[in-house]
Image (cartoon, rainbow, N blue to C red; front, side, top):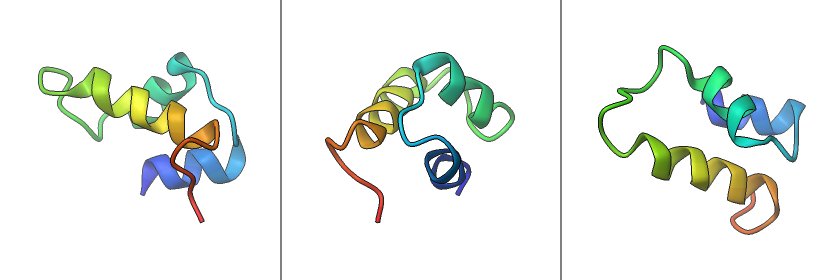
Length: 50
């Protein structure tokens, strides 16, 4: 939900903006980089959020 809210307010976030938006919501020790990359890709229209 945090990623969707971020993309609603900022359609093209950079990795730092994604990390800031997800602070406290995810464990940084497991797949965190992949999640950040996925949110950035969705914002660039590569995955899209409807």
